[in-house]
Image 1 (cartoon, rainbow, N blue to C red):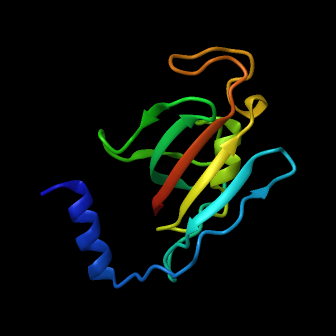
Image 2 (cartoon, rainbow, N blue to C red):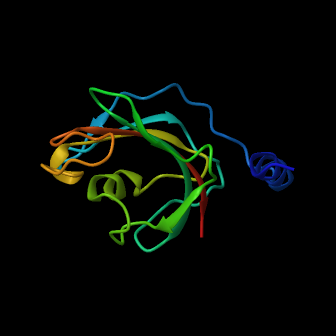
Length: 137
C-alpha cells in the first residue's frame, strides 16, 4: 500500500476535516518572503512552530524557470523547522502553517541562494515552493 494511501486512511480514521477556504491573496512578510494559503489545514491540526519536526511534500520552482526539486516522487521531506535545515526564507514561510494546509511560499534571492548558482537554479533566483504540511511532531 502506498504511503499516500496510508496517510489518507490514517487521516480518515482520525476524522480530521479540512477547513474549506478559497485561495487567499499572498501576504508579504517584512523579510520579503510572500506566503499564500491555497487550502486551510485541519480543524484539529497542529501548527508548525520553531523546533518542531515536520513532514512536508513540496514542489520547488524557479520564478522564471522550471521545477528544480519535487518530493512527491520520493516521499515526504522531514526536518526540524526554524533550525536552519532548509533555506531561511522557506523556514520563515513554514512557521504558523497547520497540518493539512497547502501554501505557496515565494522566497527572494537573499533568503534563498543569493548570488550562488545551484543545479537548475541560476544565481539571484526567486524560488517558489508549493508546500503541503503533512505532519507536526
